[in-house]
Image 1 (cartoon, rainbow, N blue to C red):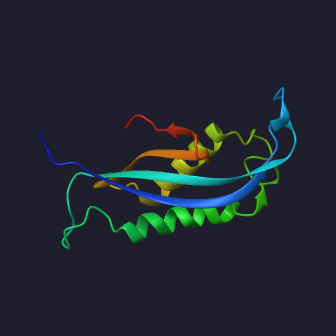
Image 2 (tube, rainbow, N blue to C red):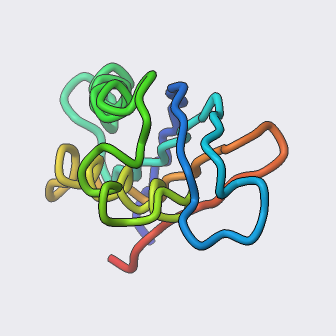
Length: 127
């Protein structure tokens, strides 16, 4: 059985959204202070003894979060067509992080998106 290192970082952003077709108050525009937790797995260490530099993971997460920060999500691609639910946002972050980080040694395991301090969704895909 090989080594497995799981690295985890947190990023955050503030954004508003409206949930189409929702039968309640969330159908009106409202905002959240979102937290994004990214888990990355490394199977081996690099020459400096790191799976991947935390700075690399943080930069990728902050770049994605920065595209949404202080914005109305319903006006941003792909959420101008796709309901900006926590589930859809988590999948969007996961795919964006995987595109930036996945290589033969490192891969994104999961993204957990916190809508509030008490409510989150964790998204992952099969390897």
